[in-house]
Image 1 (cartoon, rainbow, N blue to C red):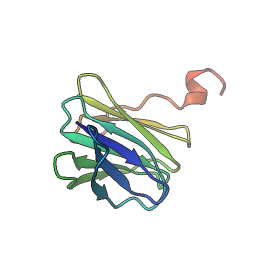
Image 2: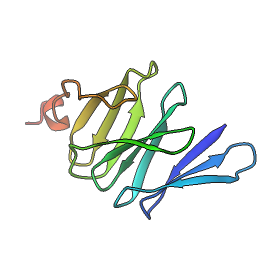
Image 3: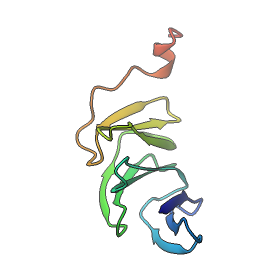
Length: 120
């Protein structure tokens, strides 16, 4: 019922899917928002930014829940189908796996992409 979009001004905007009406604007990132993803249950929205952070928002009212750090460049985000893991990948070559929509402490990260391919 709700769509989310990221913007070059560092905001996330929420829209009503049925008619495109703007619902609210979420602020807090310091640079372009490259990626947004709803948790499978629709309760949490994650946003990844060029500022190197992931922000978690309560989807129902846009309240900021938590900021996750650990990347140095732009970040993309995705939830696992069961919602137990939030993945964040960055232009700096790192991937972090967080514990669900709450953004709990990261799980053991996979090796950097160049090492995973055997390019090191």
